[in-house]
Length: 282
Image 1 (cartoon, rainbow, N blue to C red):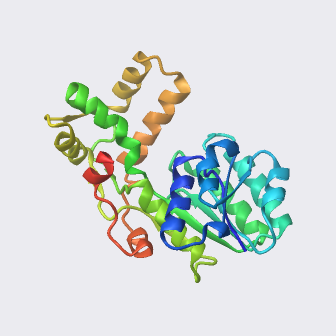
Image 2 (image 1 turned 135 degrees about the vertical axis):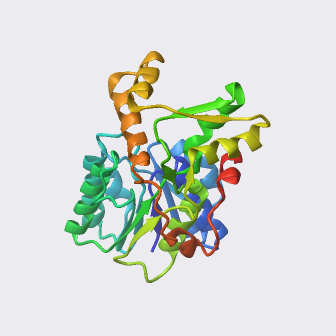
């Protein structure tokens, strides 16, 4: 029986494959998939099976998933289309006889006001309704999401946001990938829903301080109101939808929706999650 990894051409999926290999899973037991098989050639050279899998094409799922396989469904990147895409994969995997689906969701997806939650909520509901055994990994925020803030700090010594004093319990993408590998290759995770986040919830003053240590200059966080933030983003030429999304997300952080520390991630990977400064430095 194989471990089928979707989105292996993306950052998280690739790291899951690497984590499985480093933890001793045989390359022949892993199927790394993505829209472009050419981008997986180096994994194929290492003995990993590779295949095309497109979330919009059920036939590509049927061609890859075999009875008894475990499938990691890495949430798609096309916001607004993900619920339908995920439902396509779930239905096709069920038809193919998949033994379990592991899905990368969002924090408190079924109850949260997080702007990103609705598509994850719909996917979780589709997964439960399918009757396929599942494990849900509700991934919190990735520290790497703030790589751009490091460059801003390096360039002008400042970062701006409308998060107020809100906190973010982030962890590195590698931490989340390792958790997925543990769940995929291990037993006892069926039917479980894990709320994954970093061990420490930091605020943006602490983010600025961490960036200061990386770039070697003082970096200061400036608090903007949502209106000021929207105006600034619009001045950069961003469209109205993008502006609204970014400001809404900062509002979610301000309201504490990404600051919850559960300890689930550290427990799954058997070590502390990667500290903020280390995750930012890469």
